[in-house]
Length: 266
Image (cartoon, rainbow, N blue to C red; front, side, top):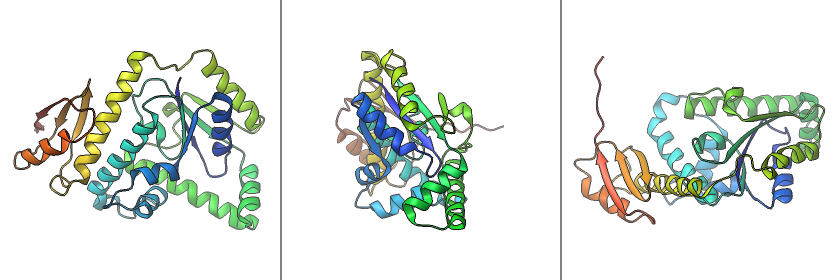
């Protein structure tokens, strides 16, 4: 009972691998569109979230709080989807959104450029030049978006547990290799791990709720949960009553502690 995230370039076989693994393991398969639908709110439409995931901002420095809100919504949606384990997510930044989650297998799939061009031409009806341009553009945007959200290099191998090159292996062979890891108990989620996943989902839901409420939407917090007892790290003296109201409304919360941010001076 694990959680698998799949990172891949455009037309690199990540979706096919996710679907193969879901069938082989009996896991739920979660894609970006499903996540966007769950994460959308009256304040942030599915269109806005989808555009935000596909196209990084031209001037990142102007969108720090918007980034915070999008991350809060998307992370809450994903952690809710995977809180019981047995799930596969193929989409942008899944391994980073679930950082620290127990039983997390972080896959990176790459494929030869000629394979990717061929698939792009077949699926989109593009010329070779158009396919190359499309792949380059999508990969560049994903790299920029990961840098914008997390300050990390999308292609850094240290971010992944397993990298699979489909140059000499088929999707089915890659699926068999990954499933074998899961079948032998690697990355299994223990009862303690499920409790940790539940706390991660509660903490993410609290942060998302605070990011949606009109009285707390301008605040930013680091949120932790331990058995449903929530700790917020941030400043909210003037909005204390609103913060307490919002947090109390989140399912699974049984306590609240607020620790003010501490400014350090070099």
